Length: 172
Image (tube, rainbow, N blue to C red):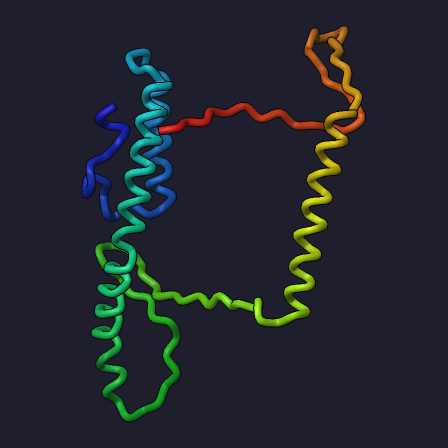
């Protein structure tokens, strides 16, 4: 599994997003086709890495933002010293072979407006009623399992079409 999970800094910095995705797909396919790995254990271990990396990213995000802000300010310094007043678009700069763009988002809090609160409560009430109706329909829905006479495929029929997705839930 050593080639599947790269060490920090081992992914070629010249690779773009889609090239990194291709590399990951190739590495994963190699592991899938190999008979020497327990794929369930590999999957569980990757979920551990996912939690680990997401936590690290979240923890260093503010410090990385401050560093990006410093780099951005340095790159804009010559423009700001000019007497010409040119509107500056959000700067995109290259750092460690990646394009970095500073962003900001505004989240509004409308909870002080009575009309907004009234609408929000109505939405919550309707969402709850919708979920309750869904539970009722599921409880009393008619369904039938048939076998296709030509292919032998099992077919579920009933009042409401349903899609069944298979997956794995990992709790660590």
